[in-house]
Length: 330
Image 1 (tube, helix red, strand yellow):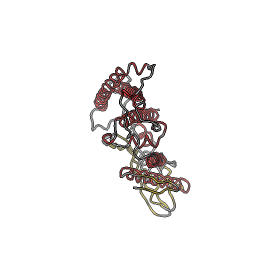
Image 2: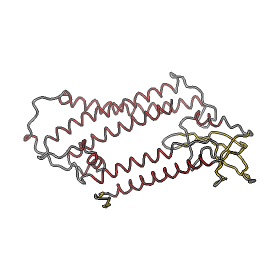
Image 3: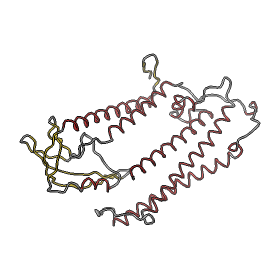
Image 4: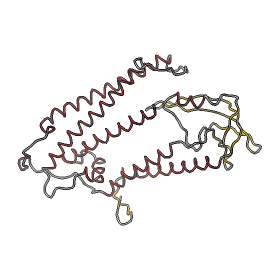
């Protein structure tokens, strides 16, 4: 599919079209929610509300466990009685990774007490309790913008990058000096792959230990007991520390593998026919296109670029997840 954009044309595959629609949807939903929250915060009036119930709801999913402050309250506006369970303004629900974070909100709203709520005159049935924006609209728009940027880069770049034939090894003159990585390449290759496999398995074993450690502290999966402080050397603290260490180990292993793979890529570039095409690692549009191409469709040179790029992309994603978790913990 070719999409004219100004003086240029975007070349979009079926996969790119799906990603483009997803990006536009995320940007649109995020922008709409941001505007809705802004209007709710700016135009809301204060009313008195009576708290009917307040508790923390646990939300289990395949990827994680999250907690939502669930507060039901009753209020009157212009002679009409309404009920609401909305804590923050806007159509989205705010959840927390830690139960204590949700509990800190719920504990301010004891059942039977009178609290302040905020009502938009244009939507009196959608009151909320905390007059601040949630981060979801900005996060959704940011993810959509990143996806849109990737789609545009892939659509503007060469449509068949990385599909270059290589000259025989005998026709390529080897450099007179070799780097330390060149001399110990096979050792680095084996070390990075083995350490990645060990850290991967050990990380998930530590997560299993963390699961049983939490069960031992809470008294069972269905227990509603309040969370207790975890000792750093206890059944929860030790698996957490181990998981953190093995996660960092996977990042370092991926980086080590990426460095080795990049040296292999440089060796393959010496075998390209002249004139040598631009390096994908200096032209993001070419790199994005290669990363989105199936490995079976690429020759040896393209596959090496793809593997090298994905090693660093995955490592960067794991670093971002680690920073996000540490930021949330603080």
